[in-house]
Length: 141
Image (cartoon, rainbow, N blue to C red):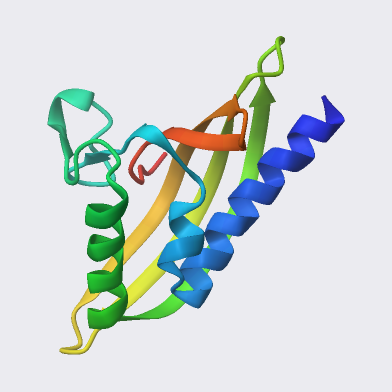
């Protein structure tokens, strides 16, 4: 399982590089075609009854446009990420990573978006390597 853990570290690091470099193509490379990304209304919204789907199921064109809009309208002021735990299924075909993040975006108008807390990134091993199938929004614990 050492190889699978290093592969999950690589995909988490690749996603982080995508945010750091504002690279939509690199960011999109981690997503599975069936990816869904629920998002809590607030960092303390632990009850999924309060969550929402902002972009629906993965769609390359729509998601690239959404992320590019963020990159065009906001400056990335900070992006700290720390992997806290990686779990690989006994079969070696599924995994999740728990990651603490502190990402701060500042808009051209001076407004801020702050993603600070813990996320769970869920992966499936495919013929094209590991792909993210689900990602929880940022929650405070």
